[in-house]
Image (cartoon, one colour):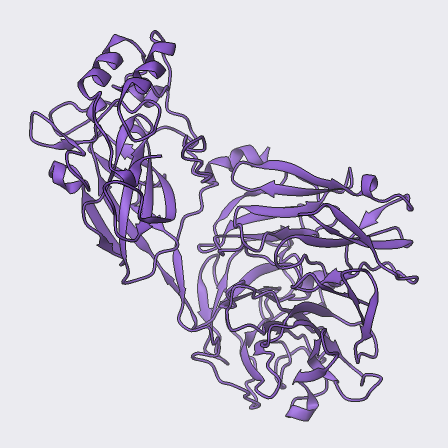
Length: 634
């Protein structure tokens, strides 16, 4: 199975990124109507970039489909990135499977071949939890919550059991597929007979008062209080509210206006029943029914371009109202305004901002539907994903995914080099024993209480010089000896080697995702049977940071938080077998339950030799009255 082959890659190599400004127009031309003809440029190599010669933006190729193959975004209205943009999903049409990629480096992690959505577009990332997605199961009609890191599934509801007046097939939206932005409400239809929405938190099913389903389920706006169905808006009770000024249903997406209201963004080739509102992107306020143009002839653009697709899921951008779109056009040669172009825009009535961000170089001439670029904006709005068969010498040979990285997107890597010694494994010569390496698990072991860390760090092989897994927490605030006064910002599992160094699974310094450059952070080091420690001083978040606990016992926050070795190095105290931050009788009780075990990876193995015996009781005995500072106690 491909999943088995690539399981060891299920580490998100963490890069942080900063949004220089919530205003995404930084470094771009605003409301520019000048011609910027598309120019020939070679297709970038896999994971490499080009600078778009017409717009000066950075475009990176992120997949490697190969000749004759197709890898594309799921669709414009389906978010590709997870909540913190550390993961993303694209669709491998050639193999009919979804690919999970690192959301920052774009490296392939694995195929999502352990679940079967009803439709390739019916996969929805949680809007807050980056480790969770949802899908409608195509076999059992279950709506499922899927945890990516451990590949577990939780059936939230079976659609057959909650609907009583309809028998048959279940499906979700049509051109628009989405959930409410609190990840609590989704909508679906049963055959062409009835349509519903379901609130997960209350297990409440509501049927819409709609007689003409037209094979389309109403889709929830971001608020979950308003729903769109065939030019009409419905409320949470399933009743009609108002009709939008649309002549017909076209390619569209639901999102928010700059004022925070739910909005329907659509292309319109004809005026609405009330006149006006014709253009490539028209914003419809679902609360008031008002509409206004974002890109239209009234603003100096050409007649609406063929093949326009809109994405409005920039839900993490605090300014609100940002959308992206791709247009194929009629000539499909990129020589006229908006032809073959990608744009971002801010939907703020009276203050619309449009920025053209590149040529996508794709069309349907050779590959039909799969040649449509289907632009998809990232949650922060700083990146735009699209597909392309790359006009020129590569035209039609294959289709890959590309990302426009806007000037507002600025990747920052926070690398932390750490060194620590474990007393139980220390040799008194600047090194630790690695006897345990034969029993160390391939997956990080801190997914249990009290750590409850769900990181997806995995190894294919255990390095011969590895001592054990370690857990590192980045914290903000002022530490306190008696109680936890700091806040955990981010946690990483790392590998501890015999020289005391801690790295990620690739052998690099640990990399943190959520730090703010220039801010101060303390770092806690946790081990499953040693007394945890916290840095005595804070570190300023920058590209490269380092801290060495082995220099002196005073490198750990609080009095007497480390042991001193015979050769003068500081070590973490062994003997905290129940992981509570205090070495006492309760730890002896853990050892006493299983005092004689061979070839094990156990918490009571205080000297890390793979055997639980009297030597581990002796290790506890020496430290039986050690109390960790309040910061590290559970």
